[in-house]
Image (cartoon, rainbow, N blue to C red; front, side):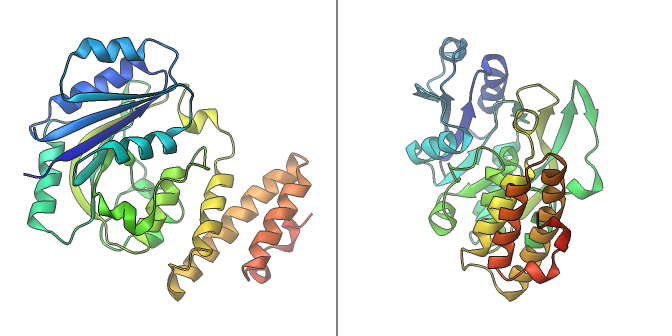
Length: 286
């Protein structure tokens, strides 16, 4: 009967975070602790959470907004569970989500991370994920490079995985999950439950993907960091360099259009330093 630590970071999402917490309280798996990290909210998040009056919910409050990476790391470190499940404050779970994932770990002790399929809701309407967003299992490193195909709200992992690969990078204001899952997928297989046990809500104005422009610059930063980590084998290095070249070419072209020639040139130098300049389109060098 392993204890599951559920970590929910939130910032000024009083109503959605209560919906998220209630979906955890409705889980059929009862051996859990729920840690909500209130990351500098200025709305009535604290009062709404207190009104739930559940002894299973513990709230950590930061006086300032430190970002989702810091919030998740803080919550995970304060937890006691051998297993850790993450939930974004604008998503929710179906009741059997935790039970099915705990069963995976009990039946397969070698497993370090598992995720489930999802239901996507955009502006109140259910939508089907595109083919490129399809989740996979096993050695998924190559599939993680173009875009993030592991969802924080869908995963459960063993706590010791953070010791092995590190934590969420608090220097990244976005794409912090892309960065972490690349480090995980480079070293460990990922289990997938094909049942959609997570409901992801999108289309609202405060999503990171809407608030932070040019997300590819943070994906590029994650790829550069990964190449410097010395954890990749030769095949993984080649795949990572190829994806880095693609992303730099697209991003640098956008920089040129917007007059940010120095940024484009800096990116070209970073790629050249890692031995990939020969395969880059020389047109990105400004």
